[in-house]
Image (cartoon, rainbow, N blue to C red; front, side, top):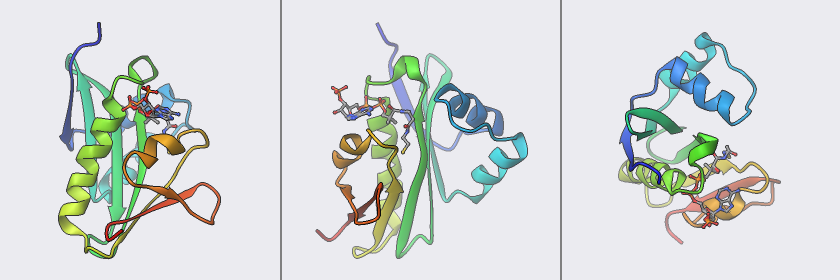
Length: 137
Ligand SMILES: CC(C)(COP(=O)(O)OP(=O)(O)OC[C@H]1O[C@@H](n2cnc3c(N)ncnc32)[C@H](O)[C@@H]1OP(=O)(O)O)[C@@H](O)C(=O)NCCC(=O)NCCS
């Protein structure tokens, strides 16, 4: 049985970023690179299970016309248990609270994950793998 998964705003360290990114097989980032990603984020959401970091998500943007989501990842052993959805839900709550109704929210979907993002209103765009979400539609 999987322990309950909690999500919250913040809570990401450079080492935590590296742990999750390495676990899902992304290009390795140095502590300095990971720290910059965290510092430059407008919002960060983390997922936790039994006190361990198990997932993350990040939003950048202006806080008004535009937001871009990235680095959404759940540690492989806990994927398909709702953690990714919980991270997305919390991130979009923080983003939607501040952006305009006509703002565009974008993300680059890793091939094969499009259906996951479609659950949150994202649609494929003409640019391959770019999906956008309009709040006014
Ligand atoms: C994509 C990812 C964040 C989803 O997180 P998750 O915790 O597995 O997702 P959830 O359990 O909340 O939701 C799963 C549901 O999303 C949908 N889904 C569709 N394609 C999916 C995919 N490739 N991976 C996961 N879920 C997918 C399904 O409806 C699925 O439900 P099911 O398990 O009953 O079929 C996670 O699989 C992950 O970290 N993948 C590796 C890193 C990555 O590719 N990140 C995306 C960068 S753009």
